[in-house]
Every structure is written in structure tokens, then in C-alpha cells.
Length: 286
Image 1 (tube, rainbow, N blue to C red):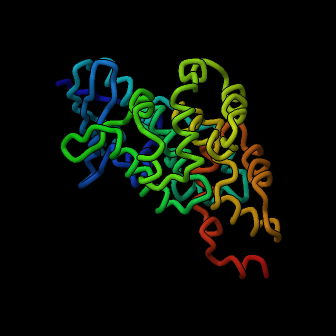
Image 2: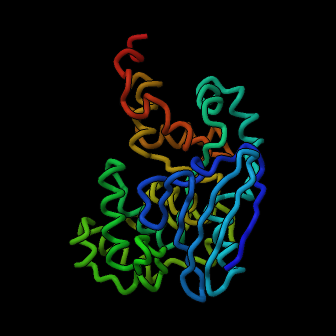
Image 3: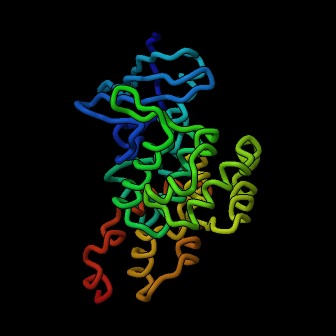
């Protein structure tokens, strides 16, 4: 067991760095508990933040060094997003959002394989239903320790039969796609190359569109310049802004305006009331 002290670039808020509805972690009373995946075996971390912004962690893992690296990735503590904040401050759409939650950032998955599950579970589905399917899929492949699922590996996904994935809620087409991608996706090559190349490689796969590719690159590889283009919330937002029914290409154009911070922009834009259909008619009438 090791104790760790981290000083992430400000602004940083632990609760804004991790997404909800993720069976690999939970937060209660300001303390975050995570299951960590390392090559030597699963680990665990308890993380909390002091009032001055310092993040403390207690890690138990067979390979503490690898567990620290994985924890730093999942929490995004090495990302300085102040250039994004300076850009967003001058933007009429993003400005009010970042002023309310300047520490908000895109969530990251505990493993590349988990991001693949999330990308296929969430296509064209409401967030609650997508999270339910992801939880079932992880329950089918991932070890459970002290109430948390260990993030899966690609080898775990290769052992998942398409019929079992269907019983978890995936359509037959996506169940077959998950099985194929678990066998063929070159994780190391995607991680080593630029984001644009990774997105192209992913979208060359039949059934993988911009949204799924953005989730895999953003949440699985930690790329701030990848966003979930085509997200239903972004489509709602664009529809309100454009005063017409928006298409996924409209959301791509919206996010591209904030390059190279598309992922951070999406995290904030998806918190906009219009992304949830609130005040939609009033906005259109304005």
C-alpha cells in the first residue's frame, strides 16, 4: 500500500473529473473509491481532495507504479486546461458554462476496453439506458471486488459471446461488432498515433460512427481533442441554436470550432439546459 499526493493544475475538482453511473468507481462523503486495472492484476485506490486543491490517494495494488500511472490517467490530473478556459471565456455559448464549473472535464474510462463497451452501449440511446447496458456488460466480463467492477481488458471482451452481449441489452449487430473489434482493434497503435489518425481508423470500421469513435478516443485514450460528435444532447442543442432539426454533422462543426479542446467543450455543452430539451420552445421563439 502506498500513499500519494498529487497537485493537479488548477482549477481541478475531483467530483468534476469522474463521470457518474460507472461501476468501476463510486464517490461518497467526498471520498472516491476506484478499481484499477494493471498488467500485474487489479488494484484499488481511495482518493480525496483537500480545500487547497491537493489530491491525496491511498493505493493498494500488486504493481503500485502501474497503478499510480493508471490513477493519474483516470483522474486526468496531468491535464492543464487553462488554454481552453481562456478560449471559452470569450465564447458567448461556453462562457457562462465554464464560469459556473471551470473544473469540469471529460470523464475517462478505467481501460480502453471499457471505453469500447461504453461506445457501443451508448449509440443513439438515452444516457440512463446506455449506462444500464454498460453495467450489465461489465457484469458479464469483469471481476467484482468490494462492490466495484475491475475495468475489463480486451482479452475479457474476446471471451464475451455475442449471444451473452445481446442478453445484456446490445442489439445483435452491435454484439457482433463488439466481438469483432475486441479481436481486431490495435489498441497500442491507436494510443501511439495522433487523434485524427485514431478517429479515421475507428470510423473505418463498419458500425463505428463519429460518436463512438469520439468516446473511444476521448474516454479510452484520454484525448482532449476528441468529442462525442452526434451525441443526442448536442443534437438538441444544435437544433435550438440553428432553429431547425440538426444533423450529426452540425454537432461535428460545433465541436470543431473549439479545437483542440473538443472533448472539454462537449463536456460543458452537454451541461447546457438546451442539451436536455429545457426551454426549447422559448429559445426558438426568442
